[in-house]
Image 1 (cartoon, helix red, strand yellow):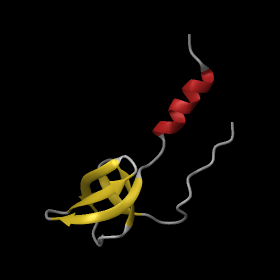
Image 2 (tube, rainbow, N blue to C red; image 1 turned 120 degrees about the horizontal axis):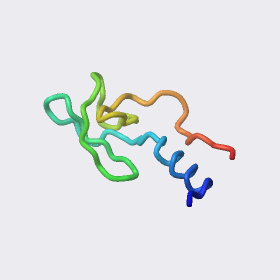
Image 3 (tube, rainbow, N blue to C red; image 1 turned 30 degrees about the horizontal axis):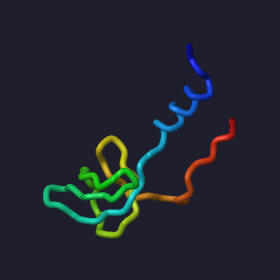
Image 4 (cartoon, helix red, strand yellow; image 1 turned 90 degrees about the horizontal axis):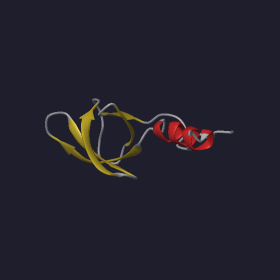
Length: 75
């Protein structure tokens, strides 16, 4: 039997986009990004440098824009 509240929590948890900071620039257009889940190595957009705040989507790092606060969901 399905639990609606647990199902909603799982759906919302998947929508979170990992954010972090660039800790190393690797050759070949790759960067290492420190996220709360650990360090990941992803493809970088041009112009990223060590210390930049980024969002990681689909294996690519893009410079973070706007607020750094997490979204708030009201249920």
